[in-house]
Image (cartoon, rainbow, N blue to C red; front, side):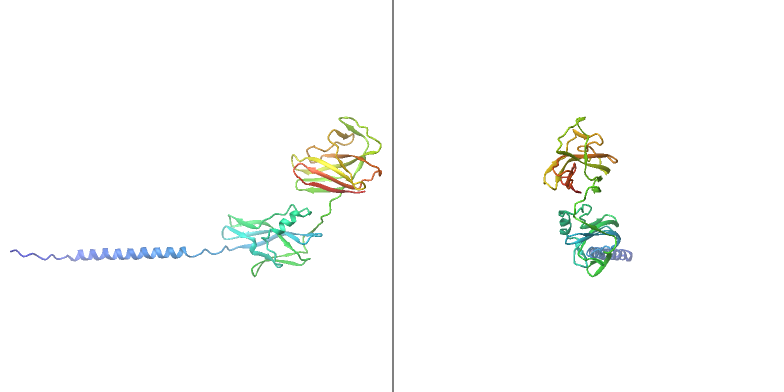
Length: 301
């Protein structure tokens, strides 16, 4: 019988096997380490935005007879990335949150002319900076007003500077009247004596006076009209509607229904049964085409 021979493993093959084995071990270790590091990185929360808030300018408004006042502040915010800030985190040193919408709602519901205010309670930017206008209510009579976040003071407003008093009293005739989309000068009342109706001379009874209010248009939005007007006589309480466009004066045209144009001068005419002579005292009310509310002016005696 022939003997079987033992096969010897050559040294270089053994070395090759060891190299492959070590490479497998190292590869498994590296892969496991990489997965661990990535998971660890995913668990790390990004740092908060590094915000810088700067007060650019402001206007202080004191409201006569109201239970709070307010500041309109323009601020600049810069950050290391995009930001979205809820203003409820920011409070005045009187404890009023800049994110409390109740103050804005009460102002709009009041009789004060404050249509210029806004209701920004969240400031955000997809970039790393932005300018924003804030409504800041306050109760103080003056001095400093601090805006804080937690225990940090963000900026300080001097309530004695840049201030304006807003009254809820109605404007008067013989004055400039400004709205969101118009700037008019409305004269005191006077009596027109030479009137026309459909281009012909208009004769009216002796007990009637044509009360007239001349209007000069300084600025007006395109297509803005005076749709209607009325005069309420103080002595009698009677309401007189403005004469329509069929009526005019030899000296000045009727403004009812006409598009308001800068530089225009025209008038409102009211046929008033005037038992008290030329007693003009009362209220004139004007209805514009883009607004459900009426502009009211006190007519001087």
